[in-house]
Length: 342
Image 1: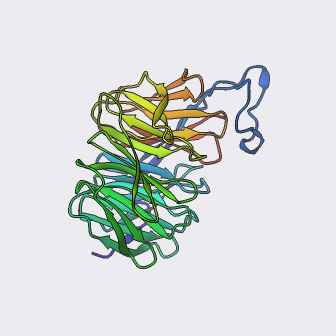
Image 2: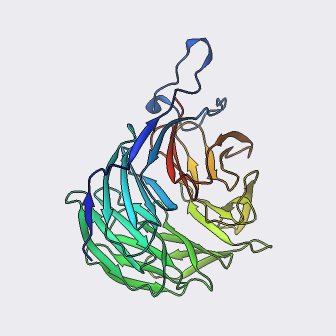
């Protein structure tokens, strides 16, 4: 089936909330480009709800900001991928083409392509220039659960319920490598900052580091209790990996030494594959959704919980340049929320 994009439909909309936190004494927050990546005397984050986005009709699986931060892509069990304006909350377009629910989305580094992974065993590449599907990648033999571009966006990595990690040539839409990666469904895959390494995790509790060129497994990380691993990604400098596991713990690994160097707790994660991510626009934070309908923000170094956002049972994502976060509901209210620290 050919994919198509449609404009805003009548049941989709944005609700703007009232402004939240303000600094005392009439101070204003510095603009994002004036904020250092890390300071020794950081102020705590003060995120407040800005917009509520409505449009998906079934559980929302993934949300990702575009590389320039102007758009937010979302995928859901309603078989749709939607694009939203980050700064107004308005729906921009809807991509239709999958035959089953969509589990994950990923932007190319230039923002011109969007990849979506689905229960229909396919990955579709969408062009934002033509608003249509340009390639359909076939090869997985079961649900495709996760997808990510490499930094050059000439390769794509996917993971699925067939327990494999696959590397694809984006231009040709062909599979280059099939890695017999895990003994259970693969829940997350991504490249490091220069595209030389791939990290994967699975329901078998293992985290694996792969050489992207050869496909060789370089390292296997596992916790003593071997909990199901929900999500994993490299740190921005690629020296660490951050993992979320279904024992309600987030771990920061020095993978070269096979050592867990920090743990972050307080949230609840025992059922869903929740995204965890870094925020570097204001301080150095670790951010995660939680099954207690909250978003938790930890200080990366001290592991202190700095802020808890009351929301919905969520997956969360951080903006690449500004103090903005997005969260998506996995059940009940089916909304996306945009949080600003202004």
